[in-house]
Structure formats: structure tokens, C-alpha cells
Amino acid sequence: MTAWSDTRQTGCPISGLLRSMTNSHHEQALHFRSLHRPGQPLVLPNAWDAASARLIEEAGAAAIATTSAGVAWSIGAGDGEAMGRDRALDLIARVASTVSVPVSADIEGGYAEDPDGIAETIRRVLDAGAVGVNLEDGPRPAAEHVERIAAARKAAGSALFINARIDTYLMSLGDPATRLRDTLDRAAAYIAAGADGIFVPGVADAETIAALAAELAVPLNVMAGPGSPSISELAGLGVTRVSLGPAIALAAYAAARRAARELLAAGTYQALDGSLGFAETDALMAAQA
Image 1 (cartoon, rainbow, N blue to C red):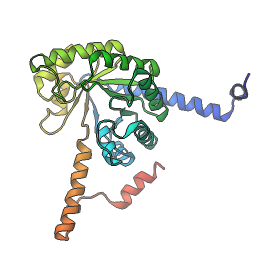
Image 2: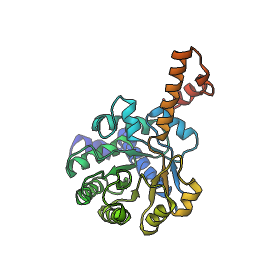
Image 3: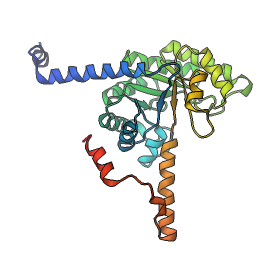
């Protein structure tokens, strides 16, 4: 018997801490699943760093979802897995340690070329403290993504909510006349492979959303924004989860650009009206340190 197993048998405080952390993660995973309720969508204003995550939690969010695009931009990289797995996982860990609500991480295509690599990413996501992931198919064949979802499911067990993102609408893939059927076929295959939910960004019309929700046996996630139906309307269409993708990050960057342009061009500061107070913001962040 190893020294480590001996310390576990004698009730080492470190062992107790590890058990507590494991139990906490399990409880958060169960809680996150319970937030997907028909008629009352889980609303996720996406965060891109620890500060935005804390502000979103303080605003009343029941959970935090990250946006890979916003994360990439915040560290000086472009969207599309350009930031790499290590930097993505570092951000997930920072967010999870900053907030007390469950965290779902946007891991793009999984930062790996094959199912074994996907499994490694998933194990590290769990270590980082997240209880959910978005895993996107992009233009890859459905059969290939099925293998990646199956690998993620095997690596995670029941500890992770796998939200399978289908990009047929976002990327205008395939024949428009059969896009809905193609999307539902992909969804069925992904669910059979172990997906807990289906995310279809890029669709905003009520008829298509309702058709998707009616045929899916798992929660449907859509990405909303200006021009989308309201949350209550989406609930009536059968949507169970609503996220904003990089929209809030883009709005924040627009505010930064307006303020900088005004300062540099006019030497004035009107764009800063309505800013958060320094003391309030610092106290909110320091409370989590």
C-alpha cells in the first residue's frame, strides 16, 4: 500500500479537501443540469474574462458561459482555436475560481485533432472546474464529430453537460432546402453519441426554432441578439437555453473604441458617462480574491 493510500485511510486533511472539491463539482454539475427547464430557459450572458464573469454573476446569472471569441480577443488572438488549449483552459480555471455559480466553457472544436485529444481536453476542463462545455462541429463531417462527442462523454462520465453545437445555420452549410433536416439528423447522431443538449447558433426565425425544439429530445440552445425573439418568446417556442455568444464582449469593445476616439479626436470624455464606479468594481472583484 502506498503512502498516499495510507494518508487517505487515516483521514488526511488534504484527502478531505479533495473529497469536498469532488462533491462540490458533482453538486454543481447536477445543479447546472437542473437549470435546463422547459418554459423557463437558462439565460447565459457570455463572459470573456474573470471580471466580466463576476459582473455577470453579480447581475443575477444562474450560471456562467464563456465565449471563445471574446476570450481569444482578450488575449490578443483571433477566433477559431488560435489561442490554443493551454490558454483556453487557463481562462476557464480563472473564471471558475472567480464565481460561485456553475461554469460552462466554450471549447470550440475541442483543441485536438482526434478523439484521444478531445478526451484529454475534457479531463483538463473538469480539472479547471467547469461543469459544461460547448463542442462545435463546424464544417467537419457528422460522423467525425460523433466520435469526438463519444470520446468526450467517455472521458467525462456524468460530470459534464455536453452541449453539441451544430454550425449548419451559422456557417450556411449544405443545401438551404434541406438544412433543417440535415441539422436534425446531426442532432440525433450527436445525442446518440452522448450529447446532453443541442446548440444551433445562427437561427433566429420563430418557425425554424419551433421546428427544431419540437423534434429534439434534449434541451435546445439558441444564440440571441438584436432582432431575435425575446426570452419569453423563445420559451414559448420550446427553447431551453439562450446565450449571447460574443455580443457583450463586442459591446464592451465598442465602448472602449468610442471613448478612445473621443479622447484622441476631441479631447473630451462624454463617452465615459455611465461607467462603473472604481470603488464598487474593485470591491466586487476583491471579494473573490
